[in-house]
Length: 356
Image 1 (cartoon, one colour):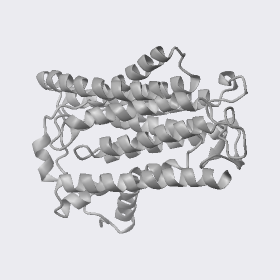
Image 2 (tube, one colour; image 1 turned 30 degrees about the horizontal axis):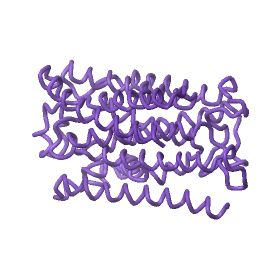
Image 3 (tube, one colour; image 1 turned 90 degrees about the vertical axis):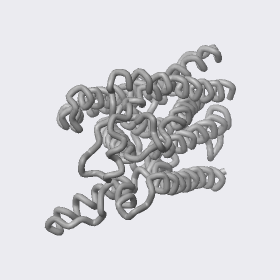
């Protein structure tokens, strides 16, 4: 428990201080955000705001995790090393995208094909290693299961390793792009991610306390390295908390694709490693709604011959164009995100109570 608190607190402080330094450095070099001309006109005032702040979130949380592990005298687990690979890997893809946008002064960073290839390589590598028998522990457990899971593995949805890897890759792609779509208003994605990662901290702590190693029984959890995953989840939660101070309206820095792709990928990674893939759709319900709004907008536009279902997608822009203040949209969307997280944790706990 001490390692969890240390990781969260240290990540918060590192990100709070590091983001303040990043704002000055990025502003000095002109690394500012480019704003879409077809977006809400109120966003044009944000042109030039420093971006790529996600780099501070990633570095702060990773450093805090390793410091906490050093103080605990334990080695990092295979599960968290895989998660860090996914987290940093997707963050790197996002960083390249952000850097090219700034360097070439255009809204388009990496070409869609190059971005897709980069995300796919990272996701496929993570998926293959997560189910690779070579990373099994002394109990024969690999970091991820080959069965699709809701709150636990669903036995009748057990897949061959290749099939499980495909599901994992799709989940990573969906989650990383969902957070990316949500990152359109000051503090919106940061606050929603903070709540989601906070919930995974609690889930991992509970899975550790009720693991089949510590508390054998009908309701125990067959999850690899839950306590170590809790430390990493706490570190990311703390980093998001520290970043939000500077990212809240009016934002002095944006996380950019560097942060949104990394955080979305990490959410998917936690879902895979905790055997809660389907539960992620509840915990990350806000991200699901945002993604569905884009899918519905595009689909309706094509089917109706050019008509729009929403004034603009993702959904947060629709409410802006209806006349809501940006801060109103953000706070109400945070409330929605919190309700989804509460629902997810409630379902998780209720299943354990029923099983116990």
